[in-house]
Length: 494
Image (cartoon, rainbow, N blue to C red):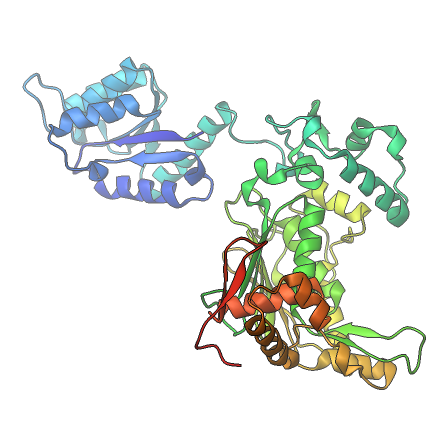
């Protein structure tokens, strides 16, 4: 729910303080979620008297915040000031009132201001301030109290808080059963499917006062984004080393946290090199991605598990020509710094219940070793040292190294099966795109299924290459998916 705050004062006395408060409340991550601010300067030009407009704003506000100092201000014929009238209107309309009094001596105040202070003191507990920072601190505390009284602020972590809008029926029985089987195999989880949904959720601390928690929705919800819109993961692939539009390939994934991680990991794996060796030294042909799968998964799981779910932003996974970036809207706990993260340290999960369930499913380790594991595995693989930064959130950067997948396969098999390298490898993209474009030119009605049969590529490989052709403006689809045809750009090169 949003609340409107009317900030009142003698117009010329606290102009800087009014603007300071308005700017702070509109930019603060917490308060911006709940409050809209009105100050004198925001009044639009209208064909009516300003004092009437102010009174209407007071009637429409939820919180009336008044700053009082030395001055009483302009006086109407009846001897009252705009500030006096605004306060009386707020009182008559039962508005939530906050009063802040500058620390000047009584004899410095206008006599009518002093009377107004006494009038306010009979109804409202006012706070004193002697500096802008002290005023800001007092307003901060008062608004936190207001939000707490309205039940808008939790006294518990986000993931442990009960969700007022969700019911047990919003959770997927199939996903809970899947988790129990996996957790029992991976971590010897003590309960079985036969124990029932409520007992399993209780054991995982995912029920709070009989209500399912936010963590339960994110982990096992049928439609988690119905409750938390930005819990999705946005994935993008860029051919260059910087963000450029149009984005060649962009996908927004929805689902529970397990599905988000799996989909995002698959997205990255579908875009990087995969080398496959021969069976010269073993019955099974060795394979190697250019970035270890465990490193990709660790970076994405960390982003999903430790992000700030109160934020209006989503996790972003961005693959560039020279690096993989995983960004999440979160911050480090005060006990940790980026340097500490790279060494042995305690575990301080932002969402402890979510982390616990992901641990049982073997998606993460409990002891806070994720960043260390990423650094060590990259070093062992021969990749440059990954970087971690706080940039409007937490960013993990994994650097790519051209040809490393083939080097790894060569080490294991002695040679590479070059015909089976990744379908979207930098070295094979151009030839594959040319082949698909030629087939489309020969038969504009050709379907994706037919392209799969002709080329021998997977459906994912065909979809990816068609996306490249579309992004370059070389082809477009006309008509429905079934029964339509391809339109060729005459400027397209063979």
